[in-house]
Amino acid sequence: MVWREICKLSQLRDGEPRRVDLEDVELLVVKVGDQVFVADAWCTHQRSDLTLGILEGKRVRCALHQALFDLETGEVIEGPSGEPPSSIRPLRTYRVLIEGDTVFADV
Image 1 (cartoon, one colour):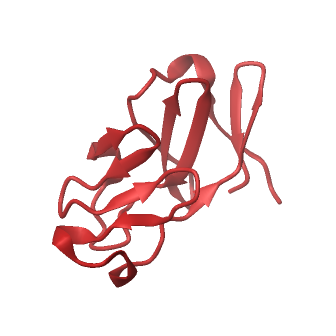
Image 2 (tube, one colour):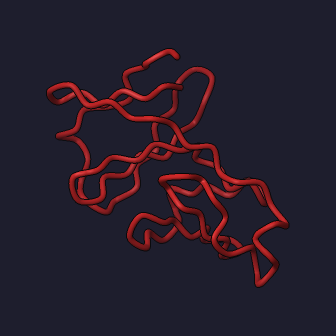
């Protein structure tokens, strides 16, 4: 496990997805209440940017074809455009650690 600094907690606004680009991975970071979620930024269906998606509680809906992902587990809740959830891969999510004002993830 490698904890990498992602951003400052004070930079996150509740319910507003943010994109963080590291050298080797592009991430979606979102604060929901007192929790912070980190996941891959790209939909597993057709590589649409999930930071442009619609946040539904602890889930994010892809703006392109409406696939719905659970931000805690990466599970596909609804497939794209009415397809079954099993039609696409789950979203990769990362464990989060917050120390002071710094958000880390095990990327």
